[in-house]
Amino acid sequence: MFEHPNSSWYWLSGQLNVIFQGHPAFRARYSGTNSLHSFTEHAASVVSTLYTQAQLTKTTEFLFDVETAGGKDFSTIYALNLSN
Image 1 (cartoon, rainbow, N blue to C red):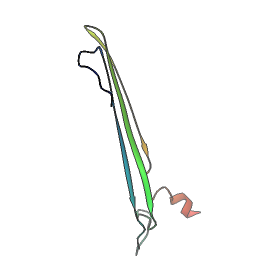
Image 2 (image 1 turned 180 degrees about the vertical axis):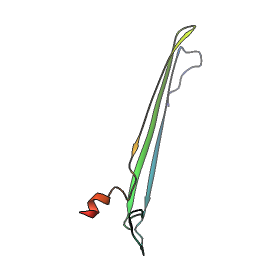
Image 3 (image 1 turned 120 degrees about the vertical axis):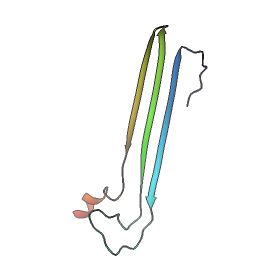
Image 4 (image 1 turned 90 degrees about the horizontal axis):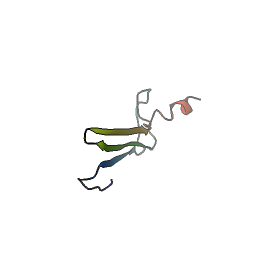
């Protein structure tokens, strides 16, 4: 994500992955607890990483890595709403 020279005393990099998924409505002969819902659904998942490094002295480096992941699947999102 960020450009930096190779001779720098620090390093900063990151990555972002976004995944979209979905399906259109379809006819289903069977619907159960482990089945996809037959109506249109979509969802997104996100994974991001920020990696930093700093060379404090010739023999000491500081590394810091932060990662986060999140998102929702479909079909189970609506399970509680459909049972009421």
